[in-house]
Image 1: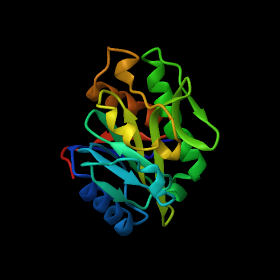
Image 2: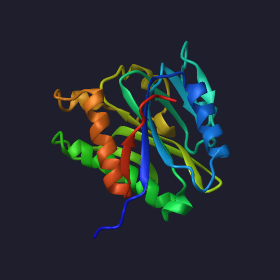
Image 3: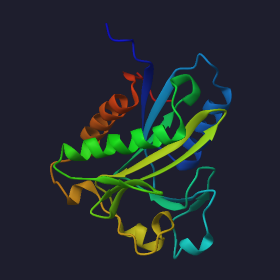
Image 4: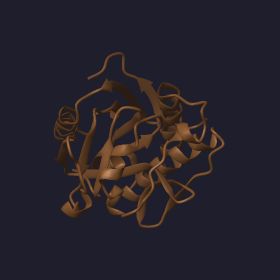
Length: 216
């Protein structure tokens, strides 16, 4: 008999302000204990640039009317907006028996496997977290580990306005082209890709998923 997989509670938050979700992630992480079920939050944010701990002001070229939020994740600057799946894994890494590299690899592989379902060949890059298609970035990744637990996470471009990415050096790389799934395969929509991403995430990181009845 196969061993029982740990549970992962899936919470679809809909469209939420970035600051409030960030605060909720911090509170969840600070107050969880050894018995707290791991969670995966799915959300879309209104337009916002987020600047990671290593972020440099020079990579904010012309933010204009889009707010910039300094956050506590790793990495440089990125953009969030409607039509992008943002997935926040709130996982006790020590309890689950994985390290940060394994978590990053599992998240990236989950996206790669989803893209394969749309006949899109994707890959990861050494020392440049995220997922790429022919060198163009389709998903960004930035995590924070506190008390051995993860928060922040993945931004996967599905069907969005990509123009704000021209206002920054995405993830600190000048000239990096950012793309979305809709331009590679018209047969996609955010709800469907969300479901596929959850399934792929659980498969790659050895979880069984349970849908939360209500958003947090």
